[in-house]
Length: 72
Picture (tube, rainbow, N blue to C red):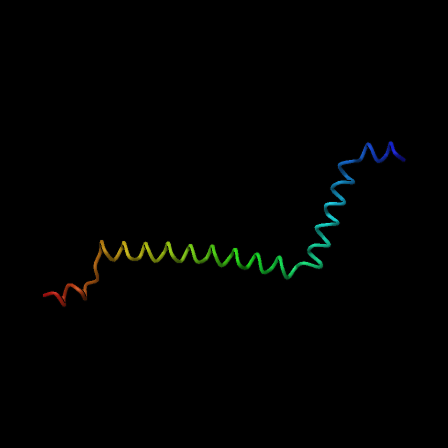
């Protein structure tokens, strides 16, 4: 039996890691979901900030035509 265990250490380790991951997903999925949603919110916020800065730069380069009419 020890020979079989020593020859298959990788399979046994992988199986145990998979078992632990499965238990984490079963019992701790709300925590994982909250963490995932927080990370997604941060990334979306960063994307919105980048788009807002790009919009401001474009408006500086190409001002709106209504602003030109008001100046005349």
